[in-house]
Structure formats: structure tokens, C-alpha cells
Image (cartoon, rainbow, N blue to C red; front, side, top):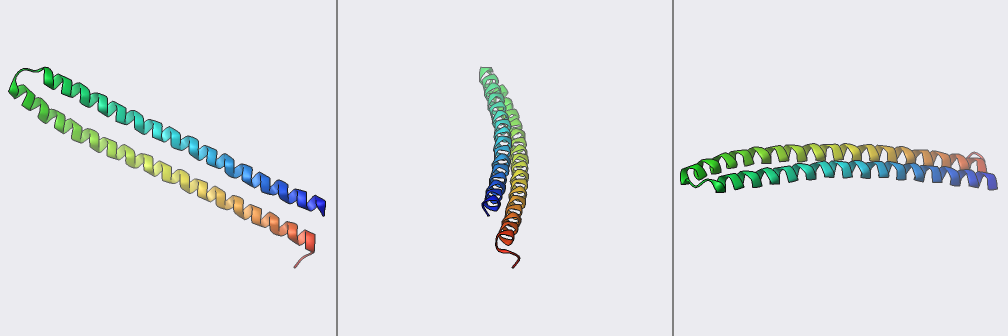
Length: 126
């Protein structure tokens, strides 16, 4: 009887370890995705700063108006790109969460099956 209990605890610990491993993988991937998103935001900010600096260095009001129009257009494009990237990041994150949920469900089902087998062996078939 002691042997069956130990086997159940080992199986349960294996399931918990696998769930922790999956969670660590999801966390790592989410961190990578967040890092990529941050890089895109920094690039956007640097580009905007550069364009504004260029526009401010022109002395002609007409040139400034033209630059402002150009910057507005580029900013719109950059924001659209940013929205697209954010959408991709969220899509990837949702995929990873779905994978984690599937893995966790499999681990729980395995733990339930092993627990059931343990109790059936312990108490005889019900």
C-alpha cells in the first residue's frame, strides 16, 4: 500500500513539474514577444523624433508645413504598423495561452487517470 501511495505522489509531482515547465516556456515566449513590441515602439519614437528635428531645422514656413504633412502621413503609417504588430503579438500570445491550456488539460487528465488507477489498485475495482 505504501508503494502505491509513493507512485501516486511521484506521478502527481511529475504532472506538476510538467505544468511548471510549460508555464516557464509560456512566460519566456511572452517576454520575447513583449521585447519585440518594445523595440518597435522605440524605433517608432526615434523615427518621429528625427522627423520632428528635421522639420524644426527648416527655416521656411512652407517647408515646415510640407514636413508636417509628411510626418503626419508617416506617423499614420507607423501607427498602422504598430497596431498590426500589436495584433500579431496578441495573436501569438493567445496561441501560447491556448497551447498552455491544452497542455495543462492533458496533465490534469493524466493525473486523474493515474489517481483513479491508484485508488482502484488500493481498494480493488469498484
